[in-house]
View 1 (tube, each protein chain N blue to C red):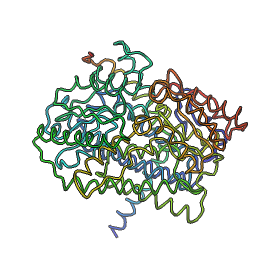
View 2: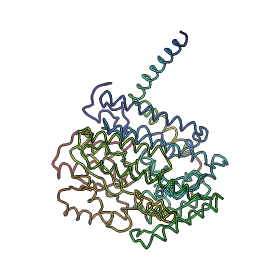
View 3: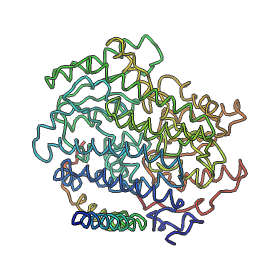
Amino acid sequence: MKATKILAKAALLGVGAYLGMFLVYWFNIENKVIFYAVRPLLNKIYDSKDRDVKI
Amino acid sequence: MLFKKETCSRDRFYDKTGIAKHREWRGFLDTVYDYNQWLVNLGIMGMFMTKSPLRIMKGMLEYRWFGSYLGAFHWIDKCMEGLTGPALRVAHTQMHAIMKLSTEKLALMMKGDRRFGDTPDADKQVLFEQTMGPEILTGFENLDPMCMEAFQCLIGSYMDQQLPPVYIDTVEHYGLPADSCRLSATAVGVAIKDDFPLNGSCLIVNNMPCDSSTMNSQLIRRRYNIPEKVATLPMRWDDPNTDKYAGEQMKKIISFVSETTGEQYDYDLFLKTMEKHNEEVLLEREQWDNLATAYTPFGASICNLFHTSMYAFSGGTLPYVTNALRKSMKIAERCYKEKINCWPKARHRAIIWAGPGCYFFHFANWLYNCWGIHILAQMDNFEGNILIPTDNVEDAIIGVAKNYENGIMRRHLTGGYEHLFEFWGWAEKLNCDLVVMNEDITCKGALGLTGLVSESAKEHPSINMMVVQNDLFDHRTISRNDMRREVNQFMTAVMQEEPLDPSLLDFDDDMGW
């Protein structure tokens, strides 16, 4: 009985996560975050790096 | 909007950046399938991160080109645009293999990067220049062949059109003319900017695909403080008298790596791996037969990349690449048996030839969605597919050299002008009515022949040919939209056709990845 309950909860969690991730997928959230927030920040880091620029 | 069928494709994107407001609706089953494949890709990324979390994070913060790989999911979406049914399934099957091999190699690269501290992994890697596959190194059981520039240049530019100009500007600042090959210029720019990882026990540079690469090798090797070997393969590879010389070059690579690393070359392992290489080639040739049919699921952008990735990274060493080929062929056989039209919007069957605009990697998808042009294959598909004799070592070594001489960007652009003209034969064999001829304005090899190529079109009246200019890696000279406009002009003025989706004709995505 206990095992069934745990399995049911795990299945519910799995379905919830699957549907939740679908929202991330559908609204293209990961790409929006990366393009508008993460990449500009990374560019600042790259620009501030001291590189040994030479031919 | 959530489940509404798109009627105007461009409404789905933000202007200029090209970032999608939401993903593509392909019908219920195909959208759910695409979502599941997105989850698989997420899993591959997750696996990648676990391979060396700290070094991968350091690499992300260190290298600009690595940052461009954050655009991977966006890039995958672009390559899948408009695909449904079996075509979508084949594309995802091949894309998973590409994701797997590229993340594996990237993780290895970071693990062996001395910039983040000394590591024994660095010495297990043998660096070699791009357009040379790993075949000749497969006899070294304990060494990892590591392609040097592909990640910083080619794949980087596919993911992010803003990346190469940073490196191109760096090298032009040192006086390189702006009409030089963009591939070589970018590679040198990476070196000058000190943006190559510092891995590898030794380095093999080469003269491939052309003399421009010879120039970039000289500058790149200065950045690596490791033993190096120059491998030169004959340009006139058609001449059988050059085979012996090519074979000797291969043997010199083996003895150089052996002496430098202390590793013994296992010729049995080499021959066994070449058998697997041949298996890959034979499966690809089956694919070519399928391409000629009206029911092929192959086409658009991914098949071409799958082949170039296989050439550059597998060479018989990656079983999941062979599996992806088998799985794709299984889908293709089912389509042929059940007579499934996998490209319902197609009005033309076409091949793309010569050097592409890498910053418009999904050009083939755009051609399909806007004008109904089904791109069956691209020039690279027919390069590096040589069957290597495996009954004796001597012939196998010459076979490997032959495979390189026929490799990516090499077979059709060196070795005699007649090879550039092989596209007519392929267009006929694949029942094409259209050839899209790329005109890479900085490729000296192909550019000089554009006039002759155009002339030759007169002898093939049943196949139309359009010429589309690009600047290989630099979207600032000829933008994606400039390329679209050239196609639009040809399709309206010469073919006198209406677009399938007018919203795709003219739009600005210059600020995007």
